[in-house]
Amino acid sequence: MLRQSSIIGITAAVILLLVRVGYSKDLRTVTEPKTPQNCTTLKATSGDDTKTIQNALDTCTKGKAVKLSSGTFYSGPLTIPSGISLLVDSGATLKALPDPSLYDMGEETCGTIDKYGVGCKPFITIRDASGSGIYGKGTIDGQGQKKMTGKTESWWQLANNANRSTVQNAPRLLQINNSADITLYQITLQNAPFYHVVSSRTNGLTVWGVTIYAPPSSRNTDGIDPSGYNITIAHCNISTGDDDVAIKAKIAPARHISVLNNHFGKGHGMSIGSEITYGVSDVTVSGLTLDGATYGLRIKSNSYRGGLVTGVTYTNVCMHNVQQPILLDTRYENYLTGNLTPQFHDVTFTNVKVLTAGTFTFNGFSDSKPVQATMEDVHIKKGSKWITKYAKITGTWAEDVTGTLCGYAGNE
Ligand SMILES: *[C@@H]1O[C@H](CO)[C@@H](O)[C@H](O)[C@H]1NC(C)=O
Ligand SMILES: *[C@@H]1O[C@H](CO)[C@@H](O)[C@H](O)[C@H]1NC(C)=O
Ligand SMILES: *[C@@H]1O[C@H](CO)[C@@H](O)[C@H](O)[C@H]1NC(C)=O
Ligand SMILES: *[C@@H]1O[C@H](CO)[C@@H](O)[C@H](O)[C@H]1NC(C)=O
Ligand SMILES: *[C@@H]1O[C@H](CO)[C@@H](O)[C@H](O)[C@H]1NC(C)=O
Image (cartoon, rainbow, N blue to C red; front, side, top):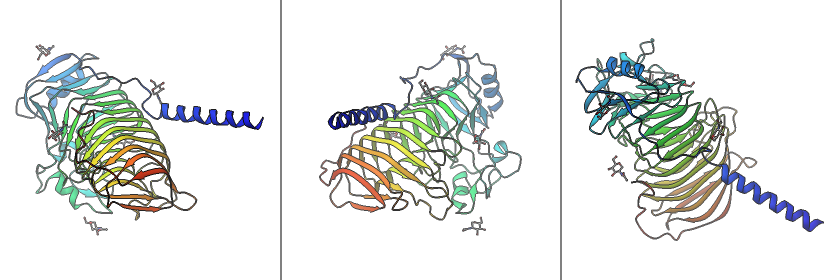
């Protein structure tokens, strides 16, 4: 009897584990996106093209795309309607005009610093939409480095003036809210005045073969900050001045997220947090290479933004020149305190190679709320620093890595 029930117990545990592994990802079947046909083709005028582009988007047939064919387009804020896409062809660039008054939300705070930082509209908004996207081998440029119209500084200089108690009012490059089945394919996004791509309450987001670039000195230029369900980020090349990817759960949960075969250059790496109040779970990061990032795999929160992060799997990751390859920190920006408890459970590192010495930190919340992680096939460089506090780490790792090249994972 006893024997049988323990066999049943083990079988149940194995099935549970398989279910957990099987579901810790985007639940959709995601394949390489196909660029929609164009409903119209626009040519740049070198003047302000906002009205022309917005009108084309508003009158396009559902399922089709407005194509920007060549040259440099200048525009203020744009909204991509439900079912419509924007296609920026190779050789075409869409630049965000650096005039704060175009993005202002009505309080005349866009382009200034205040306590809230919510005074600007995004450059591109996708809201309450289904089946919209941005495609093409062209570029969307936020011009974060450009001096703001009527001001003496650029969006990025403004960001540098903000401090612990203030926030810059600067536009995000792309905001996706309350939407479903959204696609970003092949496009290059660069030099956002603030974050590049943010999704909120979005169900079904595919970011595939996208390049995101901002210089390492540009503050808060996060690459992709996804939140929602069923999200895939694949074959992207991201280098920024802040988190390359940061999964967040500030106003709703973030679950079933796959981050597959990407390459990150400079920036703050692959992050979860710090806003995790509604919980982050079922995340798979696989086939990631990082070269030159400040952080590698990071989960960060504090008692002001805390919540539960669980079911996170990192597999086949290689890092080179990363200062802090793994950092699980429940006391991030610890000047922000509240009564939420950041807890990180069921975090697994499998086949992780770190080719250069760095600092590995596991900083749990308390003795009764430790961070829990499992290591399998983790190889790091001799001379690395290992810091643990309130941490339960199972499995093994070894300071035995050799070689100096990661390659580019699945990224071409
Ligand atoms: C995620 O995708 C799966 C498969 O398409 C679907 O069944 C599920 O409802 C989606 N999740 C949510 C929260 O919509
Ligand atoms: C779509 O793009 C192609 C190639 O640029 C062009 O030949 C065609 O006229 C466009 N169709 C429309 C409806 O604009
Ligand atoms: C932040 O900057 C503002 C001016 O922009 C200044 O009044 C305030 O004292 C600064 N706060 C901190 C914490 O440095
Ligand atoms: C998107 O949603 C967030 C969170 O509710 C909100 O703060 C933001 O204003 C929304 N942005 C747009 C462009 O709708
Ligand atoms: C990634 O993008 C950078 C430019 O930002 C480029 O120099 C590099 O070659 C790209 N790498 C890959 C693998 O595409």
